Image (cartoon, rainbow, N blue to C red; front, side):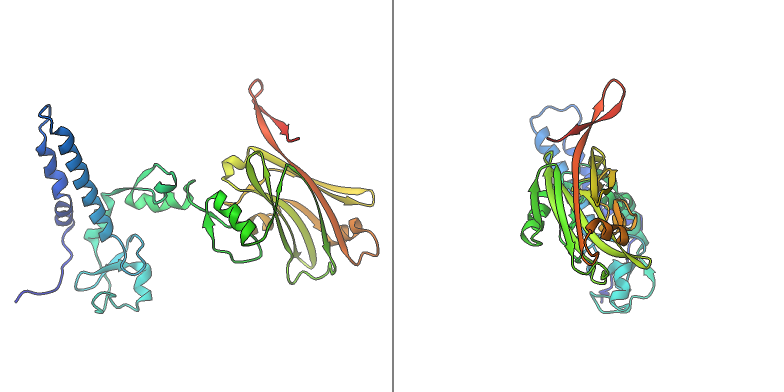
Length: 324
């Protein structure tokens, strides 16, 4: 009686089996022949190669999480494979045949993966790159075409998408104020400036130079005292963000603070920007001084503007292009 178990073949056997058609189909069209069938034969070759690569890619898909598997790739005694992350999730039991997994690695499948070159998973979003299988994951983590995370602070929003989608999401789901123009003048009022246990987050989106910018204002505890901070983030990649500059100003009672800088990309997380103090920082005592009155209520007016840096071809220096 034949056994139902599936052994993991040697790497050479697997590669020969998977790419069998790839090795033989080119003989359908002899080099230099002009019999009118070359285009059909080339199409057949292309289709066969695509199917072969697709088949291998399916073999490398974890049956539990459906993500691509990377070493170590585990297998049970019957040859069913899964990724190392899911091995602990299934309590060391094969999700296909329920046999104990043990510590068997499918070295042949790992070897097959080394021979593959695959397109970035963000191909449909515009990325044209193709990478060796084991380099693909590293690229995708920093791919410029990968979706953006929602920039809204103060909630664990897991929404991702391109910029037009996120703008609509911020407007419709988070009810964020939307403004057009490159200058702003906002007033922030807080009745109890000593209480920042429930941190205050405020976000306003500006459309300027055909781009979108997020103006953040929030209170948080720094050491023993509350701190108020305003900063700008660019809805796009870091390289694009460097084309713009902004200034923020807050003041009162004849005094003022001014901050100038480059907006950070929303690729940088909100907390990364805040905890790096990359923005206009206002200590509580200074904020209350600017507020005036009996210093029991916070009343801050933050003004600012955004401008685009233009390259000066003569001196290779950046010249500000102020938005009217």
